[in-house]
Length: 617
Image (cartoon, rainbow, N blue to C red; front, side, top):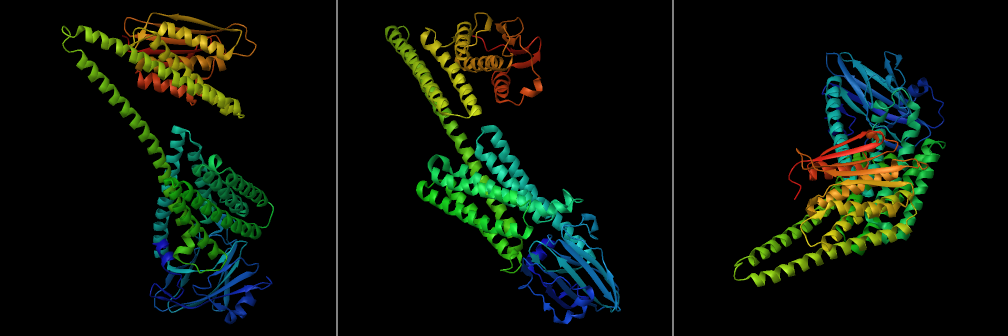
C-alpha cells in the first residue's frame, strides 16, 4: 500500500524491475534567478538525494531537482513520479527528450487543485518511457513551507492501486476520530460537564489541522481557493494549541486546586490567540516557525504540569493524561524536527504527529469514558444500597406481622415505631434537601454569570419541589401517599413567593388525588418545571392579567389528566424542545410515568399529560 511504501523507504534507486534511476540530485538556487537552461547546464554539480538530506527545512531559495531514468526493456512503460509531501507551493516538471524540453503545467498548493494532472492530495507526475529510452526530468520547487524533496517512483497501475489503498486507510483513520468526537459530544449533551466539550473542540481543531497538513482540506474543502492555504494552517496551528490548554485546565481541575498554574496556562492560551491573529498578516514561514517553537514550549509545560498534578493527587485521570500527552509530544517533536530539516524523513517522522495525536485522542477518550462510568457506578451503588435498605425494611415488617393474635400489643408498638421511623426518615430527607437548597442559594449570591445563576436557581427550585413532598409525608399520618391537591397549592404558593410578581395569579382545579411517593416526586417536578417556565417566558413584562392554570382530574378511561396552561403570548414548540427543562418533563412524563405528553398553543402555551390507570392509590 502507498502508506506502507512511504513508511518503509524513500529509496530512489530501482522500481518495477524495468526502470532504472540513473541519477537523482538537487540544488538550491538562493538567488532565484536560474532559468531551466541554467539548471540543465549545471545538473552535474547537483547534490545526490538520499534519505538523509531529503528534508531541507525552511529555505528562501528555489529547489531544482534533476532525475535521469532509463527503460531497460523493449516495451514502452507508463510511470509516475510522486512527491508525497503535499505542502509545496509551486512545483513544475520539465521533460528532456532528444534535446527538447516539455514543460508540464505548473501546480502546487497555491494554484487551483484542477492544475494537477493527477487529482490526489500529494503531487504525482505521469511520464512515458519508450523501449530502451533514457529520459531526463527537471523539477522546479518553490515553497513558503518546509521543503521535503523525497520522491517515489511507481509504474502507473501500481500508483493508482496504492492510492486507492491509501484512501481507505485515511478514511478509516479520520472516521475513527470522528466517531470518538461524536461519542464524547453525546456524553457532554447527557451530563453537561464542560470537560467533554473541551475535548471535542480541542481534537476537532487538530482534526482540521491534520487535514490541512495532509493536503486533504485543499482537495475537498476549498479546491478553487488555493490562497486559503497561506492562512489555514497558520490559523489552526495556534487554535489547536489554545484548545489543548483549555482542555488540560478542565481535565486536570487546575482552576479549583492550582489556580496559579491555571493563570499561567491561560496567559499561554492568549499568546496563541495573538499568534492566530498575526497569522493573517505575517509571512507564512515566520509564523510557522514561531508556532513550532511556542507549541513545543506549551507541550512540555502541559506534560510537566500533568506530572506535577499526578505526584500531588495520584489520580487515574492524571496518570492517563501523562501517558497520552507523552505520545502527542513525541509525535509532534519528531514531525517538527523533520519539517525543520534536523532529522530525515521516514515512517515515524512523516506520520509521527498524526499517530501521536491519534493515540493521545484515544487514551483521553477512554479516560473520559472511565470518568462517566465511575459516576454511573456510584449512582448504581447508591440505588443498590437503597434497594437493600427497602428489602430489609420489608423483611422486618413481614416478620413483625406474624402471630397477629398473640402479638397484637407488640405489633402496635412496632407500628408506632415504624411511623416514628418513617416520620424521622422523611423529616431528615426534607432537612437534607433544604440544606442543599440553602447551600445552592448561598452559591448563587457568589456567582456573577447570569446564565450560571439562572441554572442554579432552577436547580434550587427543583430541590424545593422534592423537599415539599417529603414535608407533606412526615406531617401526614399516612406515609404511603401524598395529597396532590394540598401539595399543588403549597408548591404554587412557594413559586409565587420565589418570583414575587404582583400581576401573576394561579388558578388551581385539582381533585382529591393521592399518589405514592415514587409517583409524587416526578409529578411534583413536572408541575414545578412547567409552571416555572410559564412564569419566566409566557408573559410580557407589562401584561396586567397573568394567569397560569393547573388542573388535575380523573376520567373514565384513564387514571387522571394533568393540564397546565397560561394566557400568555404562546411560543413556537420547536424552539423549546431542545431545552433541558422540556427534556426533563418529557423524560419524567413519557418514560418514568408512561404518560402521553402534548404541547400546543391555545390562547397561550398549553401542556396536557394523560396518564394510564395504575398510578392512583
